[in-house]
Length: 150
Image (cartoon, rainbow, N blue to C red):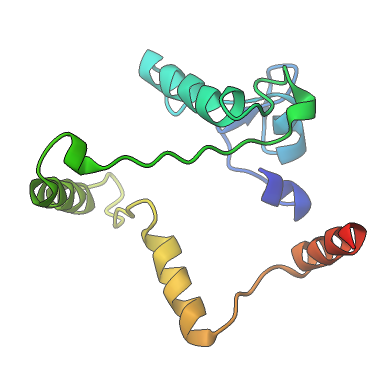
């Protein structure tokens, strides 16, 4: 949402509501309102709350607009699969899961993308080119921010 707001882009429909509870595709209005659960079930709501707890409350950042001075938060957690079992079996089972999802049929017949694959492809292209392309507006914002630090 931050990127979309900086670049004056819209966010997809069905992702957020504004502060009055109306659906919005405006990222700035969405940040004043709320993001919607992953789905309309109690599980989606639970996952959404866990993300707010882990990325907001735990690192001392803003959560649900209750700590605006805390800013945006991030939390990185690392777990060793060997704590719970065999590493090779874990890798084998993750691979099976990914292949099962990747090869699942969709309503539209479109290929299923696995989270992170596009990012890895983009990284590989950028490494070959030796540069990263970013939007001009974003570049200007970064230069402006850097000049304020110095």
